Image 1 (cartoon, rainbow, N blue to C red):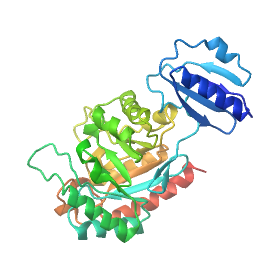
Image 2: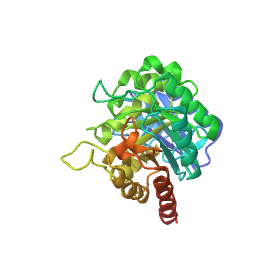
Image 3: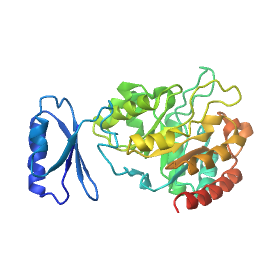
Length: 334
């Protein structure tokens, strides 16, 4: 349920109403917009007298939210959320370019790529230290060593780092990671999501391989209901009948998620297509569709990459893509 307050409401009266609602056993999320303040009520409001609440002097209207996701619902928070990703704003008109290799391999590799993508205009550095792989025999990351190499690359370039957490038991290793990524395979790892909800780290939440938008938003709800409202949604392709690409990039998810939620939405065209030559057109299409950012895999030597070299751009290819995306953004935001 949401309670919309009248413009210019007295602060003391607003605080008294919030306190009263909390005494009814409800969690109150306050969203202060330019014209209205919206109080989002989480919990069971069935015992509330809606006519009584609606008749209060400071209340404009009261309405129920039928969707099961509350915290990330745009009705609760009409204004776009801007997530601070290591000091880089994402959402609300702020477009973030995230780039780097699928896996951290060596110090030379990650520093070389970090410097290249920064020169091309990237805002954040991605790199996998813990890698979920379909085969148990594939390279699964350098783990703690990989995190240390990411920190070295950050020190060299100033780029905040984005990397995936697979197991809640490793959370303490991510203490100084700027953005924690939850991968597609862990989108419904609810114990992990709950623990991240108790964290103050921004979370980049990827859509599952065969997950609906509602399921993605419910996973975001697990994090936000724990108190962590710094969540970035990521469309990374879903499993369909396509037999030529790794997945199918659902670009309709971008405007739909913006309609349903106030959270920023970015797109990963690398995992969606699985082929480097398809990444630029899909990245440009994502920018045109209104995405709040892109996450693109870049490797200095894709042919020798230990993971997903086939979908990785070379640094010079990424620089050209970044230039084109900036041009598209000028048109989209004009």
